[in-house]
Length: 194
Image 1 (cartoon, rainbow, N blue to C red):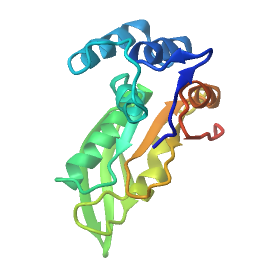
Image 2: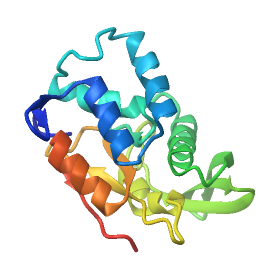
Image 3: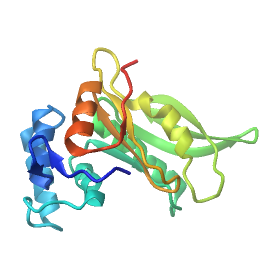
């Protein structure tokens, strides 16, 4: 996922609180949303000022509602897993509702069909095994759930050298993504706004 993030800015320890404060400063979450996430984090890690292990940074960011995870390991239910990805991406953007998610086969091809704000949408998917998500298919289509228009946010991939890991996307402007990369040490594939 990411290299070892050691500090934010001027040698500040990387903690749940510093991540919360930085996301608020970057205008990626509201103070209210950050406080709600810190309350959720407190249920499994009471000390918001304890330095995080590098592998915990992305878990903490997930609590703030700015990331989408596409599992690289096997999943119990493909359709339900896709539903969670779509709903999470829609929630990140705040622009969409997702409903009627279904995997369908047509002419020996498989599609993820769903409604986006009530309108029919479809993504082609290819499953190499019955219980593995099509990570490439999601990567190719996820920006359909980015806000678009005058909103410059897109989904930036947090890359990793291990091909069997989860794919993680953060919805951010290119400037926000650069700040996350520089401040949190995330290995972000920063994309320009289309």
